[in-house]
Amino acid sequence: MMNYLSGSPTEPGPPNEPGSADTPAVHAAGLTVIRGPRTVLRGLDFTVPRGQITGLLGPSGCGKSTLMRSVVGTQAKVTGTLDVLGRPAGHPTLRTRIGYVTQAPSVYDDLTVRQNLDYFAAILAPGHAASERRHSDVTRVIEDVDLTSHADSLAGNLSGGQRSRVSLAVALLGTPELLVLDEPTVGLDPVLRRDLWNLFHDITAQRGATLLISSHVMDEAERCHRLLLMREGEILADDTPDALRTRTGSETVEDAFLHLVDEAVAAGRNKETTR
Ligand SMILES: Nc1ncnc2c1ncn2[C@@H]1O[C@H](COP(=O)(O)OP(=O)(O)OP(=O)(O)O)[C@@H](O)[C@H]1O
Picture 1 (tube, rainbow, N blue to C red):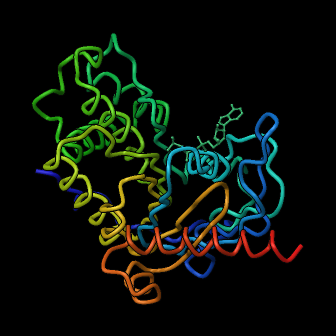
Picture 2: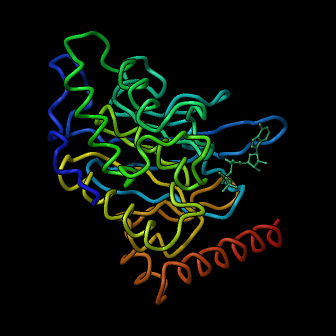
């Protein structure tokens, strides 16, 4: 069903393009973001390694989407250091190297699935010469997200989960080096969730792409190579699921997260009482 094998392996960047395999996909130091009256991200330091799946987990409102928007360069009032694929976040050359899927599916409801993808493929690779490649890319990504049987349905007639998968297919079109996916499995049934996670692993294993995936469902943490656990605009842990469980003596990542929250709350209380 889902098949990412047909995507070409990631090639090293052009000679003058920084950020080949030796730099991390994302490097942040003192990353701070203000939204309205609130400091939403508070001086974060973290690294997202290349060629792996990093899960960004934490409760609703902790700042996951804001962090992702900062990485893809769409967030205002960002201070500190934030380098993505060896360039400052938001650099124009990153546009074709990053795929971003927001929580709100960005598809045209009055076009079919295939027409949506044809449209975005034409923006990425315009011109008659690229038409054959566009056609095979569109067919591949529709298959990747398991929408072949709905390829000729209007996007407006699809379910929420199906529309999300059209958005994901759009992001897969350009075979990006970094894929930033904001809660891609929300509202999907268990079978589709499993299939999508298998697809994510195929993308990293076969193309060496880096995935940064947010979720507030802790069981998805177990499927990631690394985790950034967030709470109230801060990073509680940046580690592998195994190391987190071992360090906290927990059976599951969810228990590890709760342990770290308790620790953070206790540390905050101690700070208050020693003032
Ligand atoms: N446009 C905005 N103006 C002011 N504050 C905002 C704005 N958008 C979000 N926030 C605040 O920033 C904080 C982080 O929001 P963000 O969307 O990054 O969280 P999240 O972890 O992605 O949440 P969810 O899992 O619910 O999507 C929240 O407290 C939210 O209220």
